[in-house]
Length: 296
Ligand SMILES: NC(=O)c1ccc[n+]([C@@H]2O[C@H](COP(=O)([O-])OP(=O)(O)OC[C@H]3O[C@@H](n4cnc5c(N)ncnc54)[C@H](O)[C@@H]3O)[C@@H](O)[C@H]2O)c1
Image (cartoon, rainbow, N blue to C red; front, side, top):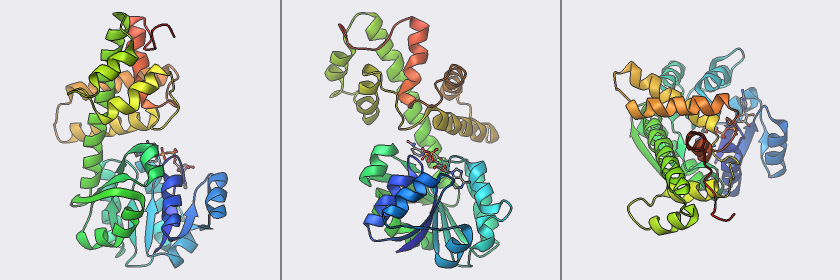
């Protein structure tokens, strides 16, 4: 296996490390030179766009947003200009389906394959190599990427045509972030009513309210640990993309639109760089109470 890898942030760095562990020859690129140096120390080679284009038939990227992806590929002296026909580019960033389709169309005109394959699982699963990949593109390109997905994740599913990986990720983000908001509202209620949220959590986690999100986020809320993980800023971007996509195809999103305004509040009050477990702070402000252990 040999690939270019662009974007070594919270997600990309552990994903690239798992590729190295699987024996992949990797050419890495990031604006953050410390992150590049860390990967090079682990056996990767640093690669500018020209080197990646020359050496690699597979290019993986996981970048903050769709505008940056477009710029890396098609900006002045962008990567696309250096790629060989037959190369497959996989964008694992969370972007709009429209942005994914634009990449696929522009690259197809250059005989370059493209698969949008955002991921779910956050930093812990990026580290464990147990991410879930949700892909959009053609079967042949997906098959070429499968060994890379297997080295970084526990599951990879081709949903359908270009853009459908991004549609799936938006669906995922609505469910994840609305669930965190619902959990937040409920735990503010029990806290103000005087119940120990730790005990409430232990009492309900085995029942119908139990979920991966409950287990991941309630302990963070109780411990007042909002170190990201998934930053509110990144999820704000995703929910903004959900609303833009929904508006473009006439899907009313009453709950998600309210969630977006909650995230706007968290943005203007300085919580943007915190984990999205920090959504609880909006509900705490409304009720004048904090979710924390009783007698803590
Ligand atoms: N953090 C999560 O829990 C999580 C979970 C699933 C999906 N995602 C998605 O994964 C993507 C990356 O998220 P993250 O949390 O790793 O973000 P991050 O901000 O930690 O990392 C992004 C990396 O991209 C690099 N970068 C930015 N512009 C660049 C450029 N022009 N060229 C090269 N490198 C550049 C940055 O230096 C940084 O290292 C986002 O689209 C996000 O929505 C994140």
